[in-house]
Image 1 (tube, helix red, strand yellow):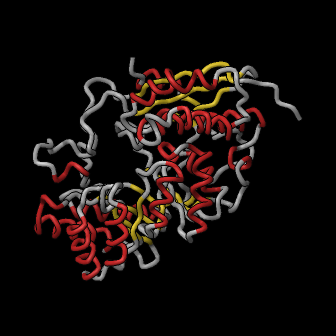
Image 2 (cartoon, rainbow, N blue to C red; image 1 turned 120 degrees about the horizontal axis):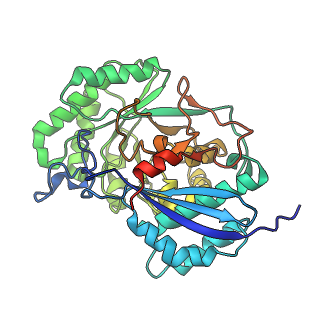
Image 3 (tube, one colour; image 1 turned 180 degrees about the vertical axis):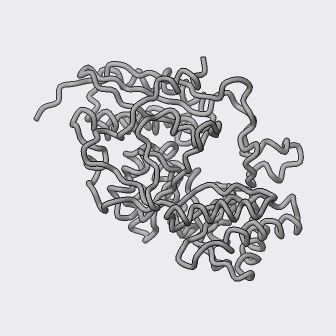
Length: 403
């Protein structure tokens, strides 16, 4: 069968909060890279100041009348500029089925100023959109195009549990996820080196509050979001271990460029180490794997190069015996997990209740119709829904679009 179609247009849509943007993490405490910086505002929780753009949507339209949708992650106004100025002109008029060649074209043409950061976020968004449009053209879900179904459904873990001084409320939230059928949960810790020994004790209390309500067969993970240093991380993890709490992993205990330090930490503690959310392409991941720095790899399709690169990363990790559990939920991640035996589980952000303003990690539930909720701790992908399986919610786009 011959597919005579070409890419006709590429459009970007900037997405952000209506009105004055808040600092990321306000009311949702977690330790961050800025937690130890004296000049950082307390509410600057993510290593980023308040930004008006939370994400970038990219729409790829073909001459056959099909639309593919992709997205870049938090704060990537720059990614939209890269798409419009550097990448879209390369793609217009080309065959969307040449997705591998198009990825290399985008990556190599930006090598002198790209390789990571906003440029890779831009490539990722376009790659996701290309796979979405291929699925729509072929009337097949993306997972069937990249390996097929490897299981009936995807086991997912509940990812929320932000730090709070109300430990009983935190425990109640955790228990609610167990009652909803989740067999794994992840919480955020709030304190780092700047907070001293008192902060370590408070972190331990947060972990104990969640652990106290989890059955023995429910896995428990914690996220330090790049906010610790080597000395603090080793002491904090040992404190949790000495309290008799067995964690499935500690996530991003160190900044992403400290690969050797991360490997050393992994050898000095008994708790598994997860990282890779802020690493880019198979080349960056190769460093993590060859240094034996991670027990769990958490590549992010919005950053690492999209689905085309993610499949290579999963294959590379499998050669090292390292499972891949991608960062973030969302359908583009679920399609890779479904088609990859090396991905035993996926992250799942909880849909915010009606009337609650979402943060950037939850906004996709508003922007897209079709994003799945977990059912008894599993996400199901249907065989009969083409592409990624989502559609734009036009009303939400109008509300959240940045002019």
